[in-house]
Image (tube, rainbow, N blue to C red; front, top):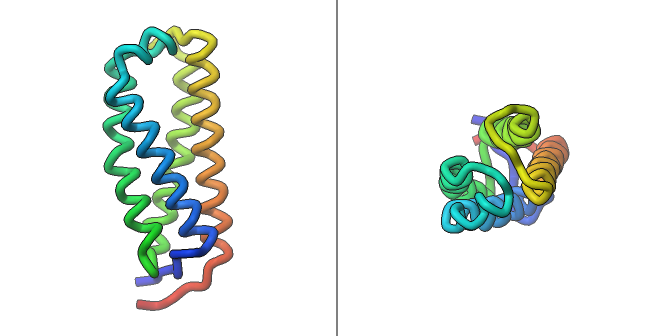
Length: 134
């Protein structure tokens, strides 16, 4: 299996930051879905489900960030997942499924850009890390 040195690198730090932000966002969306739904114009079930789905993802990111080595294919999967989340978030705004408020648009676009930024940092971290054969 091919692994990458992780902790204290750009890759490790970007995984950690992504994990902390994803965990905080997920907890907020899950626990405060009802008031957020009104403010953002997004469905409560969508917010609750999306928030809940972020919690194990965030835990995985934090776990990987503190490991001395991480699986290269797993990090590629995380980059892909982040890009998919960002694209899906923006596509959501083009559907009739939601009727976001101005704040809902800002929230959705901001988090899509942030997630794409994490994917970019992780990609750069992948490209810059030396491989270790385990």
